[in-house]
Length: 186
Image 1 (tube, rainbow, N blue to C red):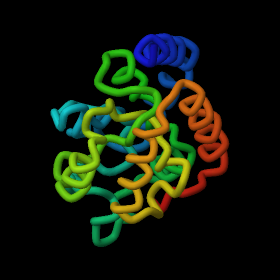
Image 2 (image 1 turned 135 degrees about the vertical axis):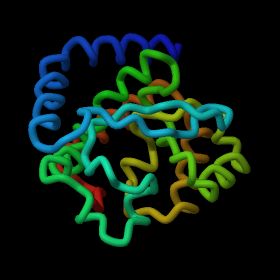
Image 3 (image 1 turned 180 degrees about the horizontal axis):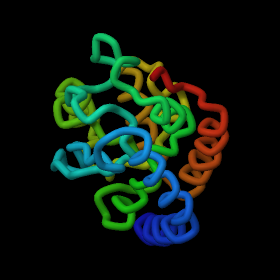
């Protein structure tokens, strides 16, 4: 049932939001040189790698590490990128990954390919069995502000409580959080 909801939600989102997606892609291209999308190597279900699309919010020469590990993140983020991150609009292309089956609408956020500490803790807790999500329980409970062990605790709690009703609650809370830009550090 969860997969059917993901397919319906991903397809509906891509169709309904297509004018917004096109406008954002054009804006990213006009603002700075490089592609509109950044394909990030992420860890998915079963710790397999997949390419996850996001609207590009950073310069093309940015090192491939988590933003919080950059010495001066503000140096790399584009002006439009700040807005896209604060509103989570940079995440919209991931609806393609949901439709494709690499991701779910709700689940633990996909780790970067080099976040070995996060991947190891999630594997230990069994969270690696889940498809990563466009949003998740940890996202609405702190996002960038949470240390990795706390994120994993929330991911494990999601694994235990997972249901369609819980997913709906998380999706609604995500919409509220995104509108306010809460929990985004860069």
